[in-house]
Image 1 (tube, rainbow over the protein chains, first blue to last red):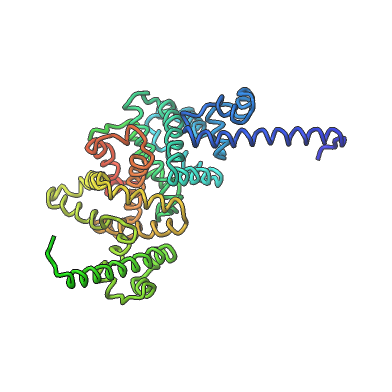
Image 2: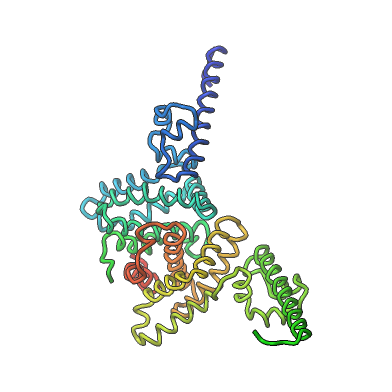
Length: 216
Length: 216
């Protein structure tokens, strides 16, 4: 505990309480705005106006729209950062072999992220929101497209064209299905399989979606 | 319209109304029982007792427990019958090549089944139930395991051992993910891709889960 004079402690606590109320007002406005306008339609300017604060303050607190969404939805991490940093680390480690092991890297990254209780809870919360309300669904769809698919396309060096997005969406279908089956449904023996076993089984399928011939 | 004497019409309508009430009472009891005890724990005997009818009548109306579940959940088809009949037809058509094309057959069968509005609605209803309540989740997990995974294991000639069930669960992870991504989330361009295109892209991944080497 730091020794503070009563006066300074009081001022700090007051400022902290005020900032905390402002942050809560911004997150409330963000949740309403994302639900009403979807991820793409919501703007930091509109959310700031609804919360009665300056847009610069929203940027100061939360950085980007993705950061604000993550805070509003209580995501403990930025999905695009997980994807980008895992692929970056694999590129450093594997060098030229990088592209041949992308599928394993993606599957391993997701399974290790989901092993963290808070990340798993946030993922299951998003799935539940999407499954229960049309607004939640539109929000999740646009969020997945704008952040996860886009960062996968970039980090994996796919083209940002119809083919690149098709490959990324196929990857999403297997990854979302793995998360749904293993963590939500709890379907055995996939639910209790080890990460390395699943990486060996599913990595090559994801690899084919990313770089293989999809016409046969 | 058939010409009936008022008296006979009245008796028939009365009998039909009575049967309809009995069926509704059985389905109500079934929904409560599946929710409370799960798919495996619910019994036709217990459901009949809760509905105040003879178990033989439940068998007469709905055949098996799967048939009763399908009626209670408003599934327009029996999942195990879709799997078994599609694999049977493919075996007749492809002969010895059958096992080499299983993946394509499974993906094509599911996509064509989901193209039927009522089947798609039932599938999305099951996903929503599973995502919103723990009871719905347990019910869907046991139902998928007892009927779909089991019939896939049988029809595809997988062993009914840990490896066979692991292969079937991997298939389920890709198929559930495809349905979630294409029909619930509506993620483009997978959402509007043609069936043949998706069969070519995803069939080989499912084939590998069924018959390939999963250790690398």
